Length: 155
Ligand SMILES: [Zn+2]
Ligand SMILES: [Zn+2]
Image 1 (tube, helix red, strand yellow):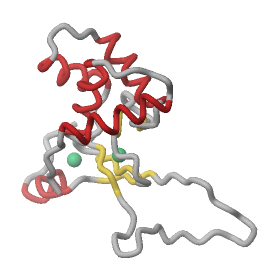
Image 2 (tube, helix red, strand yellow; image 1 turned 45 degrees about the horizontal axis):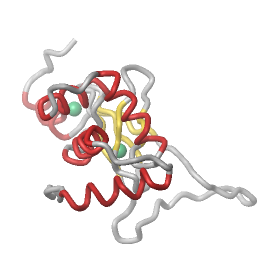
Image 3 (cartoon, protein in one colour; image 1 turned 60 degrees about the horizontal axis):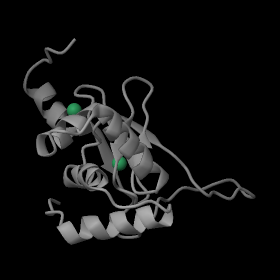
């Protein structure tokens, strides 16, 4: 699903999140948040910096780091950590899990059953779940296709 992110939507979400944390709206926060909503491919801080800098040439890496931190604290963005590699950022705050592709290093959202909106997980009697995490690993569709077409040249 490719939806164009509307400006109003970004501002509304951002304003609400910042207000909850007692913070104010800044163009830098707007730019970083908009960038994360625009392309939901779980960029690292460095990748966010490169994208934001293209729109806002004066912004510094430190500002991007601080802004990402702020967005995480406001509950607008979450961090995705993997054993190797840099922390990545995800602007999808719906309950979901992450699939890590071993070939391209891509991170993909895996969402619950669209019919029920639920993860059918059964717990032993007496357990109550408030949160859970699953890590998926393997190859994404693009990499699976090129794997099948030719032997991978990646080391
Ligand atoms: Zn891949
Ligand atoms: Zn995600």
